[in-house]
Amino acid sequence: MNERNGNDLCTIIAQAISEMEAEQGKSLSIDEINLADLERRTGITRARLRRLKNNNFKPMPHGRTGQHAEITVLSGFTGALDNLLRQGVTNSAVCLERLQDLGYSGGQTQIKIYISEHRDLVPAKRQMIDPQGNRGFRYHTGPGEAYQMDWGFITVYDEDGRNYRVSCFAMICHHCGKCYVEFFPNAKQENLFIGMLHAFAFMGVPKYILTDNMKSVVIRRDFEGFPVWQPDYESFMNTVGFRTKLCKPRHPFTKGKVERLIRFVKDNFLAGRTFWNLTDLNNQAFEWCEKHNNRYHREVDDIPDYLHTSGCMAVAVPLVESRELLFYLCPPRKISFDGFVNYEGRRFGVPFRYAGHDVRVCRQRETLYIYSADFNELLVTHEINWGKRDQYCAGQFAEPEVPEELPTAPVTTRVQMLARPDDSQLGFDKFNFDEEDLTDD
Image 1 (tube, rainbow, N blue to C red):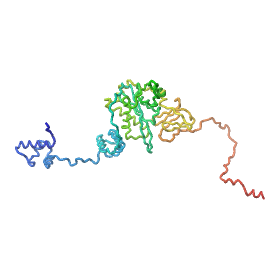
Image 2 (image 1 turned 180 degrees about the vertical axis):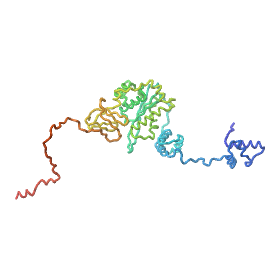
Image 3 (image 1 turned 90 degrees about the horizontal axis):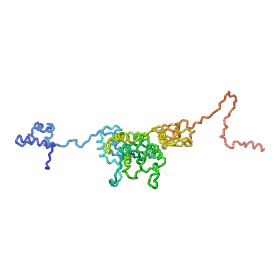
Image 4 (image 1 turned 120 degrees about the vertical axis):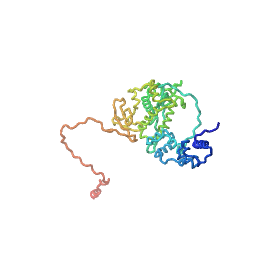
């Protein structure tokens, strides 16, 4: 019962030699074994049998066993991979994407082997508490019925080593998992409206939004427990046409998908990523969302983009552009006394004659548009260079055009203007003390 039937090299050769001894009726020594007959019985080449004969037909390990090639497909990319490991990036899929951008043509297995052999480069993680297990049931909705939204925050280091905070707006369909991610300089309410409108244009407008108790969404609860909405947010809900449901804090079963999305963005998209400015980061985030939405997800057992198009969009309403939405896409600003508008932490020049006026500001990629408060006039546009210095506009401090009288007849009156006297002499030079002595005599 415990007999092991093997087909290794030793067993095959031993069985063939036993058959030869049974046919010849005697025990064969190594020198008496016919290699040609043994080749026909085993299918092993005669050259290999001759080598095995020198070791009494016992296979020996290859002489280069355990040795590795000095140059592999991963050579030349180990420095970049080491930098990723030092940043705590151990996801082989993320490392593969970063190395493919640098020209790597190998597979993911080589990267997995390298990561397992260089775990010493990964910084130690803090000790986590033991998991508490499942304590509830997840919240399910129908196709296109609800989206989840939330903010995440990251720290960015510039080329001078200074750091600043960037806010990550995330929205995900509760049913199919299609997501949208966008980055802003801060998490103010005006950026919340812009991010929501961009997400609605990307995924449609659902029946209601699941979110936590943001200051820009809800002020407090009344004595019956109903939320008192922030006035601007309530007006925004009525304009776009959706409702909002608030979730319990620290309860991931209702809004856990978007929280997990933000964590996934930090661990997958932002891991080891570099960018030039916020526009470049948002372009990379949009490409990442498109790629992520068109992959198979085991949780929904399908592709989110296909599920959203076929099912969710039958319920969600496409966002219709209107004049009312422009007031949310273009937040208000007031021009300072010296003719500048502050937007996203930078100052942009406006003609000085508009100082003190209210305007609307909108940024599209690398261009900033400054409109009048009623959108009837485009005051000025700026090509954003993302520097910290003030950006002036053409003719910002030009004198306004006023009526001026010009001569109608030839001018004949002429006068002479002299050079200004030299004031470099000492103060006592204006007194002539010699003259005063002569007068006294």
